[in-house]
Image 1 (cartoon, one colour):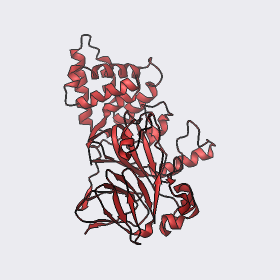
Image 2 (cartoon, helix red, strand yellow):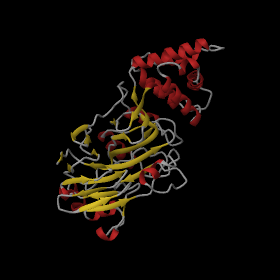
Image 3 (cartoon, helix red, strand yellow):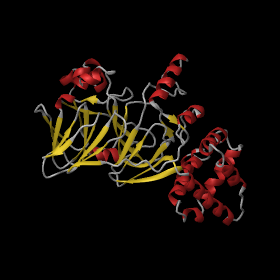
Image 4 (spheres, rainbow, N blue to C red):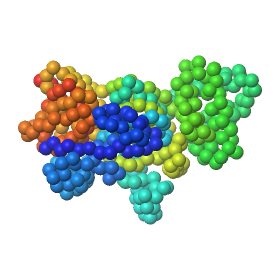
Length: 418
């Protein structure tokens, strides 16, 4: 069964005023359009465009009323929830620094706040549900910029060396702030201690030592020495973050993170504990259906330093690219190491492309339209920016047409072309 779905983009302040409208081929609202949610999450469930066809106005209500039809027997007996959330995301300004919990951390945190009587809508509520929230992002725009994961300590030392050189070349050198930062980064738990210190001391106004470091690093990042170095993109990011959030600890924390520029079609996979922030660009984002976010700066929202530090994975890593698997001509699969979701991108081919699904799926189309036929014989034409929900009884999807189909589903399906 194919059911047309849609939604109104979320108007978060960091959103682009044009990118999602251009993706959808629709008129822009005039305000920021940050995220188009396509799923059953209670925060913004997708609307069923032909409510009479399923007897319900939105996807969440339909799933609740008819879980076996909408989800299939396996998911209907395992919580009766759609385990993934597909988004079209358009960032024109930096999002908050954030991380997401493991399943065990989410369950424990949710139970603790429930027992403490913290309302789900409370400003200082950390855990809105008991689920984890791993996610992947694929660049749709020509480039997509992000911060993701703690960079190798050798690179952190390289950043500090450039800041030292910039300070030495300044009309009035002031190495004390860098001495202080370096001393924090020299202990056994260097990254954890430094991040916790910056967040605790740097959020109390401009009187703490951390605020001194934030101000000095911000000034040095704008120097010719810094902007001519191999770490110029990181220093340019410092300037952009400082302009948006002057004095915020996240400005300095950003230098401890991998500065990533995806080109169209490249992807990042953000596992539990990965500290990250999207900076600019249009992407297809797919995640476990959860709203559990622990923030660490670059935001006016609640920051729980203790909980964030407990959730963060401070192990330095290379930028966590997720390499797609080419499974047939025109079809690639993005398969992270979680069972909640996987993503297919189907581009035009001379013949019909096929994607097998063993659970529900959501298809959203980029560019020109496509026709999708399911295993039951049902078919649907999907235009630019339109989306459909697919029940698992369709089994195999055959895709034809000049557009690009993004298919979010569960499990590890197989694909072919022929």
